[in-house]
Amino acid sequence: MGGRTVTGRAAVAAARHLGEACRAVLETIDPREKAMAARAAARAWRSGRLAAGGAIALPDTPPRGARPELLPPGRMPKRGRAGSPRSRIALLHALAHIEYVAIDLAFDCAARFAAGRPRAFVDDWLGVGADEALHFCLLDRRLRALGSFYGALPAHAGLWDAAERTRADCAARLAVVPMALEARGLDVTPATVARFEAAEDRRSAAILARIYRDEIRHVAIGRRWFEAECGARGAEPVALWRALVSDGFQGIVKPPFNAAARAEAGLVAAYYEAL
Image (tube, rainbow, N blue to C red; front, side):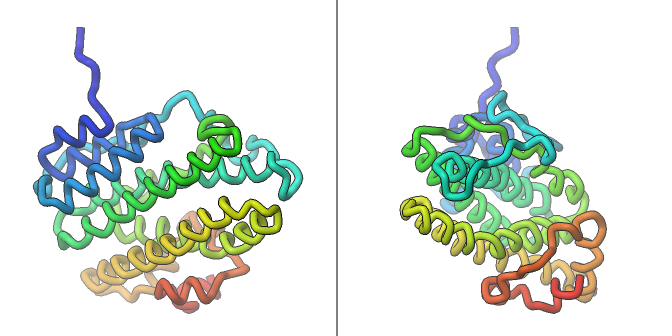
């Protein structure tokens, strides 16, 4: 009889190099254990305990547990009346799921595309992954304070699709995930914060405001490495970004745009306005 597969913090502690640690995070199913493993892996990398490199097979799709039930967008239940307790819980749950998947997106990026790139590339993406883990924990804790928990409701099944479709091209991954998907979060989050404040749920609003500030930095990191990738290829950044996003992802770039937050991240209007 085979032994039990070790995942989570124990697998990170046993990892010798970057690839093993990132795979351990990706293969951890339990949400809170995944978050803790992500933060442990980032600490291990910063402290120098993990060797660079370590080519290793990464899962095409990280394993998921029975909860939350994953549904296609068209089958997701309505959230209820805006501002109601049910609606706020449903929205926080949806955001927690985004952060859960974002942990995997960051660690997959760090390990999959590290070869041939500066150590700072890994520094940045493991840092992003640790941020996403913290965001997940904040949202899950808030859900529990409101009488719910992550996994209590269905969640969007398609959030990993962008990773699957860009796994062969670092520039495509950076163009789509931080510079399109996360940038879309910058557009919609201020209104979401205002909705929670109007419902006098100031604790949830404060958590989302904290996440919003971190996500501006994440978009900036993605934009900076995308432009570095363009420099290495001799490609013009705006033209390449438009081509990559138009190839199946154009629907996520739509107004209204939060031009101020995008500009703070260095995502100038030339990238997105006329797409």
